Image 1 (cartoon, rainbow, N blue to C red):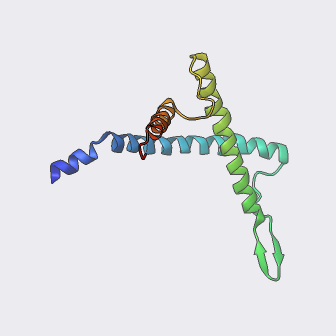
Image 2 (tube, helix red, strand yellow; image 1 turned 30 degrees about the horizontal axis):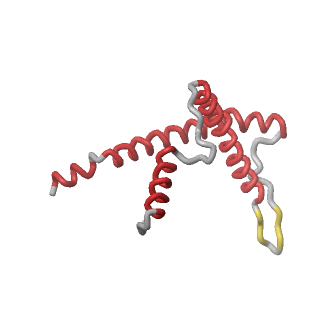
Image 3 (cartoon, rainbow, N blue to C red; image 1 turned 135 degrees about the horizontal axis):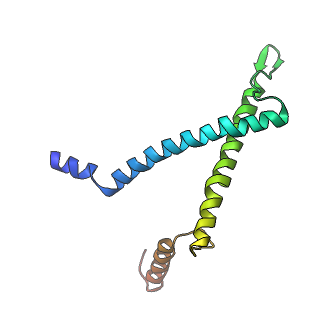
Length: 128
């Protein structure tokens, strides 16, 4: 039973998933630092206020902290923009420079091939 457990842990998918999680955590820290230390100060320089958490309004004794929501919204948009402009666009440019074009419909070649096989089997009368 221990050998089976060891074989399970050493499967390619488990190891790749573990590596992806570790890289994802490190990447998250990098993007968070970029937003907190570069993007947010730029926004603060433009708007004049780096933190909106003290913005509130009150209705019937209930306090609504809409400033905290604005902070979260600005952080989300900043992170999304940072990932898009500093990761996605440069990687796209690098792939184009190497002559690698992504599929127009966004599907991989493997997915397209599998769909063609499925359609061919259906056409032959199989129940796929």
